[in-house]
Length: 522
Image 1 (cartoon, rainbow, N blue to C red):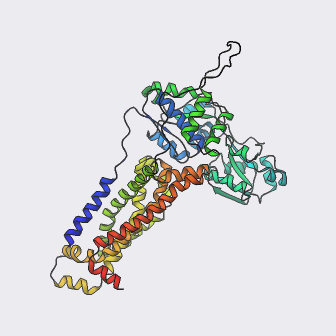
Image 2 (image 1 turned 180 degrees about the horizontal axis):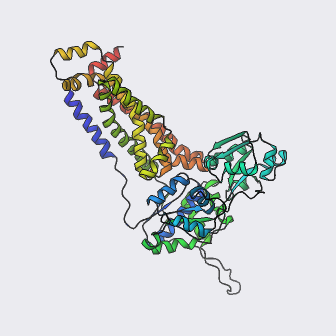
Image 3 (image 1 turned 60 degrees about the horizontal axis):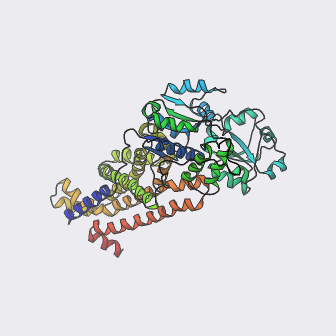
């Protein structure tokens, strides 16, 4: 019976391995465009990818890569070849420079990292602080310096702005603000907060489509704190040599996109809930349309011919099935690795109190590390995409498996262990034939707990390009699209229930019948 269960366990684990494949390595010569976790960056990234494909390059777009630190680390490692960035962010958040460095100085600084900066795309997307018209009238707010008279106003600011030197720390010091109620919030949710009266002041990107929709008042930067944030391309210096045609095609955007065009493109995603591919295609048609002929036959109406990509734009994001399968891959492989290490660690911990204290302490500390902080730590080492997601999920899976294995082995009835010794079984035989089978209910409970936790935690993988059901959730949060959020959240919840059911069925296959009968009798 024990041998049959061992074979069945091997089949189950092999099925997990065979049922989920790893990421296909990028092909040589591929252009990988990155983008941050907001709609403007998605649209620009998709537009660049389309232009590269039209030039004959094998190009892909890795979107939703979190904040500046994540995507910049990916660029330095070579996980992406270029991404849209802003001069103010390069100066303040990346290079940590003081003052307003010009483009030449920025280029010289990033060149030391093997990177380059293109000419501006044509628009400036600066930070600003905004309030509703009612709030502006009630408190006589017209400039940022006016906030000093109202320290009790509620500010809802994005997390990145709260930690950047060119963000809230710099603004508050520059203007002498002593605001008492400053909260961090996701960017798209800040608009909901100010619209519903749950916040008085929010930070805004000046090309956001929500400004006009909500009739927000942008407070004047009367002491000129915010530097210019001209949109540029931050790229690896070897890209023009590796992909000259693709690079030349992408440079067609330089100087072509003004603020109104970018606002219209952002509105398609944020307000109209169109895909980034559709918004990028319309942006390309608008900004790359050739000028109409100066003259024409009398009575004829001249019309600008549209920009039409030579290659079809890729479809929308992966299907629900694709997201679900990738989510299962992330959960399955990380759980398998955790089981292969965690069960032996639990066995080892059960042999000695000293070892138990060390093993349980280490796995307990790993469990307390915030998931986003752990990903931020792993990205500079492992890059983006799948590796850091697998490692993070693996580490979070260890504690329930180790602890339940330890508990199951150390709480066995003493008379059973004595009976095994009386039979003259060797220690290894006692472990495999008596102790582990008797502890199997607790071990499987630990595996089930880790699996269910991993289903939820794996949604964070969407922030680093690893995909899964977190991808639509994060996109929906960014665009305040509840339907898109549900496309990821509902399947993830159902998947957690199905995983729990699967382990209940596995319980019947792997737990000895006598133990099940005893549990049912209890």
